[in-house]
Image (tube, rainbow, N blue to C red; front, side, top):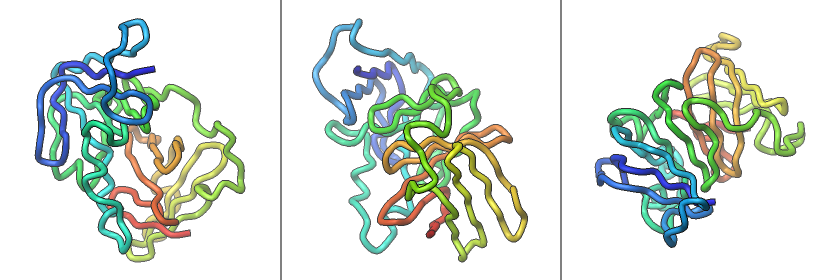
Length: 204
């Protein structure tokens, strides 16, 4: 299946945009044109397409190239489609989106969210208590621990306050997508045994 995001403002990288369509063929951006009956069209006039950029990933000791997040042909098809304009600082540091403003989330070419709603239940796809992506993840520098359990639920302890945030999550390879119980979507990435999320750098 090919995803086509039509008539959007595309943030090809933080601070650089173009107007037009974005095509995701499999797990990457670009590819050949396909017949309409073999594609999924996301109408995105008035919307922004932004990379799911986790800034702290390439600030660590052995980062991937920052350019690998850019929405260019051949790069991973991992992005969000949000209504309205997108702030560059939010893209780089802490992208948080309300369900009413989230048109779609695509991770490695797979649709995870559409029209603010998840497309599959949390806690599936073979999650077990032994999955290395689950468990307690802590950033002592910022006094936060995030608990991820096999039923697709998370909770956070912040500055000693338990359940400061709770909600559901979805795992797609090295990416995690959160839907908080208070009503916002957020995003993270696993890299070199570390979980990066909204400025937090969490270790098991």
